[in-house]
Image (cartoon, rainbow, N blue to C red; front, side, top):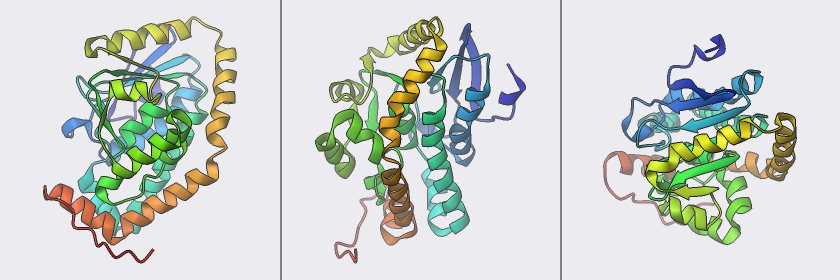
Length: 269
């Protein structure tokens, strides 16, 4: 393994096939939630992958039977009250999306179990997303009282259309991998025990293809998403304004205290 990957604490690297790099999230938190270190590393890793000439394809996956339940809400509650932490998290959220889109190498995600928030972002922004039929997904932002910002505002309407995007982002309902495939949110849903095998099969097939042609094709297709850059920047601003406001604080407090949130129905906006 090259030295460029030695600095990562929450990501495990292996090479299952020639020219294929597999990255496994290894969170110390329940359900693969991202602590501050992992959130930063998941936002940064794509630049190192892009610069690594020994890699043509990436598999991105979770540890054992889970993918990632998104951000650590205890840390996000601190983000609500700390401007520096909030701006850092906002930058990392922006970097996660832009760095995945700018990474020239095809990214294949293999998702089992729960994928929420930033975890779901890496599934939906991948070039090929392979998920378990019974995987559980949710955007989750509205459950904690913040706008469905970052990736959601730009990738959901492209993948599944505005009607489904508005329904699932406004309600924050859970849905399965099988339902995600029906909505065109993911590339392929398969039985749980086949997820890793199918991801490796796809990665190997891509690794045996024409790398320049693949990268140019990815770059062209990603321009459909990059056209929405003003929407993306606005969505980040709205989301992190919410973290600083009463709804974000109440939503996270309610989740941590295992109660229903009591949002003020009288909104000044």
